[in-house]
Structure formats: C-alpha cells, structure tokens
Image (cartoon, rainbow, N blue to C red):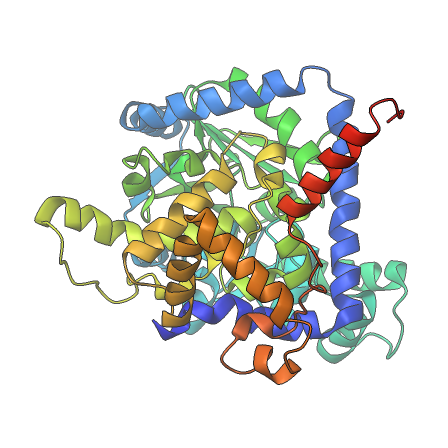
Length: 489
C-alpha cells in the first residue's frame, strides 16, 4: 500500500528541472500538432478509426480461430510458431532457440513486447550479447535506462545528453553535440553490431491470420538490416497484434504513422512471409495476461491498442511528468490502464472463480501501479486522438473505482475522497464550506495550509479566494441583465 504514491514521487525530480520539463512538453506537443495536420488531410479519418476499432473487436472476439489460422498459415510458409503463456515462458523459449543455434550475439529492433517481458536482462544474464538497434533505444541502452516513450524512447534527452553518452560509451569527441556528427557515429557503431550479429530479434506491428505473415514498421530500416544478415530471425509479439485479413492492413497502416509521428506512412513497412532462403524464422506468440483482459467487457478495448503513442503526445500529465515517472514499459494514458490491470486482473479472475477474499500473489497486489489511474486530468484528449477509439479516460475513471475498492489508495487520499464525496453530495454543506473557506483562506498563515499533512500542496499554490461564490456572481449577473434589458451583449 505504501507504493501508491509512486507516480507523484517519481515525477517530482523531473518536474523540478523546470527547463527540461518545459522542453519535453513542447517537443511532444510539436509531434501532436504534426499528427493533427496529417489527420486533417484525410477526410475519411473518423471512418478509418471506426473501422479499426470494429476489426480489432471482431478479431479479439474470435481469437482462438484466428490464432489457429495464423499458426497454420505461418507454418505452411516455413516459420515455426511458439506459444508463451507468460513472460518467463517467452524468455525461456527465446533463449532455447538461441542456444540451439549456438548464438552469442544478437541485434534487436524496437519491440515493446521484449521490454514488457524484460528479455534483455534475461539474455544478458545467460551470456548473450544484446544490441538494440533503434537509435533511441540504443541511446537509452547505453545509459542503462529504459525507454521513456514507446515510439520516441529517448524523448526525455537533449542532444547534449546524447553527446555525453556517446563520448563515454563509443568514444566520440567530447562536447560535440552536432546531430549529423552524432548520427553518423551511431551509424558506424551499429554497423559493426549488425555485421557481427548471429541472430536478429524483431517486434511485430501486425500479424495477419489470412496469410500467416506479419508486418514490422520502422523509420530507420534497422529491422530490415538486422534480419537480412544473420540466418536466424525471431519475431516476438503479443497476441493482440492479430488482424484477420491482409486487406485490414490498409486501415491500420494509414492510422499508425499519422498518429505516432505525424508522417503519412512509416519509412519502412516490411512484410515477412516465412523465412528467407536458407534462413530460419521463429514466431513467439505471447499471452502474458491478454486472455484475461479479453474476458473483461469493461476493459477489453484496451487490447485494440496499436502502440502509436498518440495518447502520450497529447496527455498534459505525461508531457509534464516524463515517461519514467510511470515506472512501466508502457507509460502515459494507455499505460495507466494497462499496468494496473496487468497486476490486478489475475486476482480479479481468481475472485470470480473462488469468491472474494482471495489473497494476492506476489506482484499482483496492484499497489506498484495503483497511483497511475490518478495521474490523469480526465480531459479526454487521449480518447479523442486514439486511432482505434479506446475510451481511455472512461477506463481510467472506472479503474480508479477498482483500485479504491481493493484498498490500494493511501489513507490520506481515502479520507480526502470520502470527505469530498460528502461535501459534493450536499449543496447546503458545499455552500457553508465555501463561505468558511473564502473568509479563512486570506487570513490563515501559510503553514496552516501548506505543511507535511497536505501532500497536495507540495508544488502547488491555491489561487486567491474569490470574494463571492459562483452562485452569488451568477445572481448578480442576472440582476444586472434584468435592470438593463436593452444593452447589447
């Protein structure tokens, strides 16, 4: 229970650096504006969103059928399909494939699934050299950090930070922060890694049941180069990436890049159908709690997510608190739904089978991410920009109740919520409290309001108390209108 303040605590250090926080905010808002310009160039945008939502819902409603169809068709193309129930099984399967092939060095293109299951530390612990080849991911890997954004992993860093990292890790000139110089240095560094790799691991953007193929989208071509050189390719993916038909890709590929980075299409959209000649292709399909989510009618739409990151770019909380404040692989509004659900859903499922009072297993108490649904202003901007129409702010509101019902809120917030509930449910009590506050706030010493018993007040200041309530001001306005009916408005 003591970890429910994790997001505010983690955000505090980021927010304290005012210049960086504003720069981060403006950088992401720039991407949001690019997205808006692209959206306005597609008249049928809302129709595409609706189709994307419907196709995903249909695919999830028939997951067993479409997953079996995918496996059958992928196998016919020469790929080997593996099934992993959870992160541990996924990592064990991947390590087994690499050991069977005698592989010691791999390259990996960006894959949030492998971040979710913590594949890198697992492989490194077992003696495998792993190099992330997406530039942003390579930067954070060199810094021994996690990505702070699912599409822009190093968006929290300035070029001066990158210059310092490259100088320390790959020997570039000290203090040279020229983007062209740093990019060329990264290119040369990664070329050596590509040439020395014995296998490549990629993520997947879309699995196609009809063909048994899959699609990987990148802007740097790193997935294509990584899979072209070694003979062994392992594609790791969550089962929610499934679409029924190849024709469905025409919907999602138009939505993905525009929503993610404000581009009309990603620079490289690579279609894989079986292994290359003389090569070996393994596809690892991961559940890791997704089936439980699919059985929850209130939250199953969260599985529609195509990992574009648009909800992060528009979220005022994410933009001002930074991705690391979420302490999760997927941050932002979508992460504030996914992460608490990932922790809570297995327990909820067991409760439905065994009755209430089920003791939480290790890691499923939900307290680690219990504060995330409250890292939200409920402005609804995430829902507006979501290309697959996930009702994110409604889900966050519903999740607050779930977290509260399970006693995962700190006592201070529980008492505050109960008091606010009483106050807001009684117009008379609300009026009395307002009158008292307007009289007391101007004369109370600051220490009486801002002290350690009021964590809300840390970093926040109340506005000056107004002389009148809204109701009083409204009555005055009506009286003024009644006394001068002919005045133009």
